[in-house]
Length: 113
Image 1 (cartoon, one colour):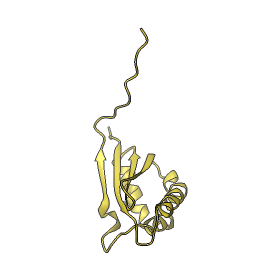
Image 2 (tube, one colour; image 1 turned 60 degrees about the horizontal axis):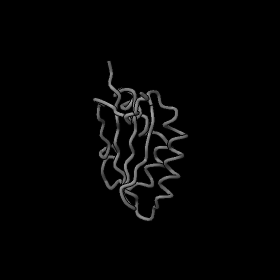
Image 3 (cartoon, helix red, strand yellow; image 1 turned 90 degrees about the horizontal axis):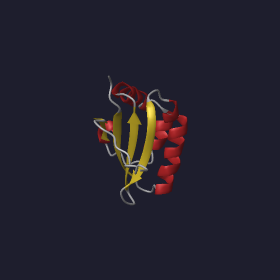
Image 4 (cartoon, rainbow, N blue to C red; image 1 turned 45 degrees about the vertical axis):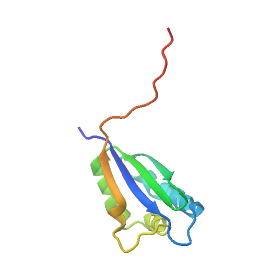
């Protein structure tokens, strides 16, 4: 049985780009690309400070996450999203990591007596 995968992608804004630019590009990336990927479960865009962010993506399997990575390199929607990021000279996937979900927790609900 395959475990769900959580993908993390560290994001630094490119010079001259704003948080609003990132959110707009993120919304377009979601609608044009991620919403159509098999195995996609959910995604959060998190803010650390004015220049650093984290994309947190949940997949139903490692195979689904890896298949998306292969498609991302040729996707115009991904390219537009990456354009608001400071990628340096590095490989765009260098800031991406995949983690297998070992356990998931939710709030404890009180039980009526």
